[in-house]
Length: 194
Image 1 (cartoon, rainbow, N blue to C red):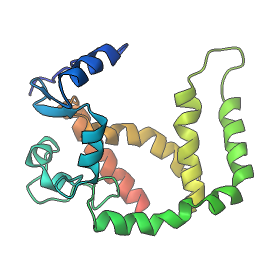
Image 2 (image 1 turned 45 degrees about the vertical axis):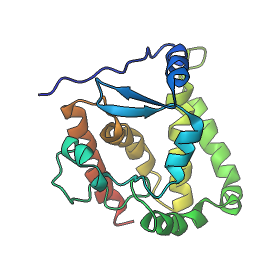
Image 3 (image 1 turned 180 degrees about the vertical axis):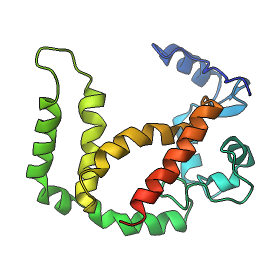
């Protein structure tokens, strides 16, 4: 079992550390993580728009190994998040109509109802967590509404996507990565029939 590396900046206040990294240059090498961290906006924008860089894990032997997948396997089955043009462009075009301003306006009352339900689920007078109560579940529920997916899918997405995100986290341990890969395939089994 490999040792899980530590993030080099404190979580409670990373900004002084980011400032030091930016002052040293737009790219920082993080030895513990064995990765480059791009901290300059201009370079990050250039990378994200360049054809020389890839979002597809198939193009990263290191990531494929971390995910426990053989070279050439397609771990995300061509997901929008993990694909490059022209596949990314095609997938984006396929779903963009669902998320149009007109469709969002069409379900405005339902969105308001979802927000009210999420707020009502909190305990009156008790502190609440806006991420857990609103910012995470409400957009997922709205996406399900826009895509015509069953409402029962939203809680499943709320439960499983944090596990899935671990596959993108260079600090995740082997158990978290395995849980993320399992969550990804489980969600795929729910979503493909839709």
